[in-house]
Every structure is written in C-alpha cells, then in structure tokens.
Length: 144
Image (tube, rainbow, N blue to C red; front, side, top):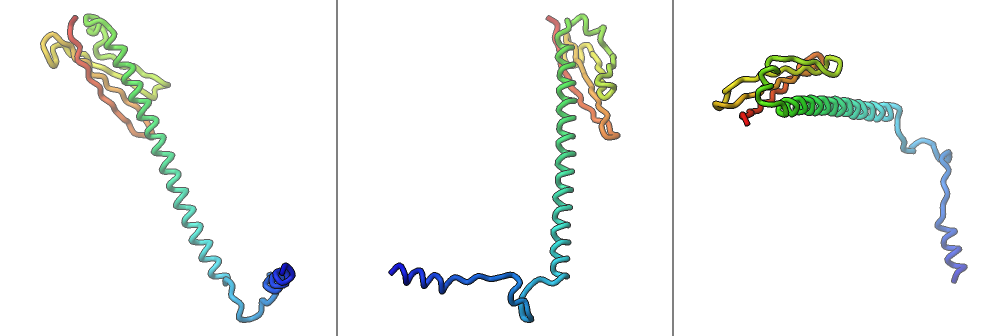
C-alpha cells in the first residue's frame, strides 16, 4: 500500500524550470506593461510621501500651538499670583522669550468687568513660518 502511494506521488510531482518552454504562445508581461506598473507604483509612492510631509507639518503646528498655550498660561499664572495692588506696576509690559520667538504683553484694567476687580488681558504672540499666531487670555481678579 505504501508503495502505491509513493508511486502515485511520483507520478503527480512535476518540476518546472523557468527556462523551459518559453516559445511562442507563452504568456508573460511586455515591456510596456512593466513600465506602466512601475509608473503607477511611483505615483502611489509620491502620494504617500506627500501625505507624510503633510502629517509632519501638522505635528509641528500642533507642537508650536501647545508651546504657545503653555507659555501664555504660565505667564498668566505668574501674574495672578501677584498681589492685587502690585498689578498696577505690571500694566502695559511686553516681554520676549525663547530667543524672541514668543512675545507676551498684558494690560491690567481696573473695574473692567465688575467694580472692585481688575481684568488682566494677556496677549501671547509667536512668529512661526513667517506668520504670527496670537493667543489672548483674560482673567478677572478681585480685591481680597
């Protein structure tokens, strides 16, 4: 029985050589078909490259926006820790940070929103890619 299986397997196994039977009537790819396939593949790779560049620019924009927001919030927290009376000394100041990349200015307005309060308006600006981005934060502080 084992002999029959082995014999049957021997009969069913066929080995092919790539170089055999390449005469007329054989199917294959023409040079034009190969060139068209390479062109389509190249266009796809260029599209993927463009998407990658766009993703990197988006990530950089998000990072710089986060840095500007964190920086502005830090400066606002610093101002709100000052005493109510000392805020008048800090009115209309501008500071530059990170090699001039960020600038912060603020204005302290007395009785701006409610009587007996001071409104701090902080404006943080960043120059990025030839454009200015501005973030404005406001905080109302009451006299203690």
